[in-house]
Image 1 (cartoon, rainbow, N blue to C red):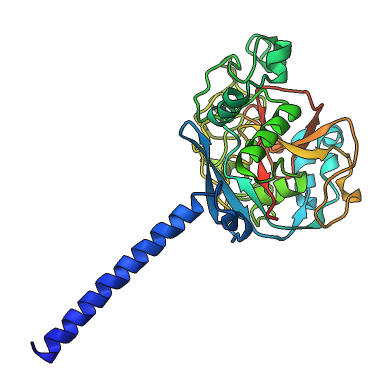
Image 2: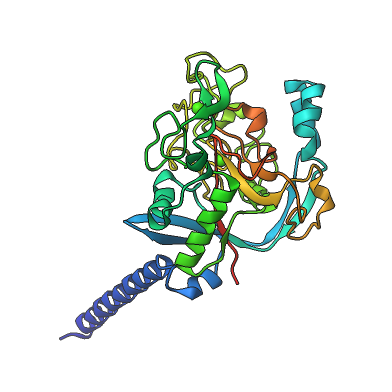
Length: 345
Ligand SMILES: [Ca+2]
Ligand SMILES: [Ca+2]
C-alpha cells in the first residue's frame, strides 16, 4: 500500500474514531443534562442558559433553565412613568403603578427557573400523587371571568380542573392559591431532593427582563409584542365585546394559551409577561426599595403575597416587566398560576 493510501486510511480511521467520541460525548452530555433528578453535579455546576429536564412521572416532564448571577435595574423607569400617566391618567397611575418605583440596581445570585409556568398536566401529577385538594376545590369557589358581567368575579364551582372554560394539558394551571403553589414546591422538592421554591419578585423581574431595560423584553412599544404575549387583544373579550384597553394585534387566544404558544424572552423563558400572573415568594411591601439591594427577599411578615407579570385579560400597562400586584395567600383566580425556581447549593 502506498504511503498516500496508508495516510488516507489513517485519517479516515482517525476521523471515524473522533466522530464516535464526539457522538458519545454529546450523548453523555444529553443524558447528564436530562437526569437532574439523579445527578447532583448538573444542579450544582450550572452555566447560564443550561437546561435540565425533570421527570415528574407518568411521562410528564418539566424544563428548568439556569440564570446566571448579575445585576439589573428593577422597577419602572422615568420614561415608563410618563407613558403610564399618559396612558391611564394621574389618578390611576398613583393607585396602580406608583409602587413600581423607585427604580434601583439589584444584584442576585444565580438560580434555576422553570422555562414555563407550571402546566395543568404538571399540577395533575402533584394532585394525583398526593391527593392534594386546592383551596378552590375545598371551598368550592374562586374568581373567574364572568361572561355576563364581562369581568372577573367570584364564581361557584370553579377550580384548576375546571376554570369554567377549556384548558388543554399544556396550558398554565390557574385557580391555585399561594398556599397551593407552596404545597407543589414541597412535593417536588421531596421528589427530586432539590430545594424548589417560588421566585422572589426580584428574581422574577430579573428573569422576565432577561438583560433588557425596556417596558417589555421585546422593547418599549406594545405593538411590537405580537407573537410574544397572550393578553387582552384585538380578538375581544370572552363575551365577544372589544376590550377597553388592549394590544393592537390579535394574539389568537381568548383565555389562556399553551406553554409553548409564544416566542420566549432572550433567556428562553416563555410567557413571563401575560398569559397568567405568577405568584412570588415575597410578602408584599408598597416600597420594595427598603429591602437590601443584594438578594432582596421582601418583608419578614405581611398580609399579601406578591404576584407578577399580568394576565390574559389585561392591557399593555398591566403586562410589563415592572408590573406588580398582590393577593391574599388563599386568593385564587382564573388568571393566576406560578413557576418555580431552584437555588444551587
Ligand atoms: Ca389574548
Ligand atoms: Ca406570566
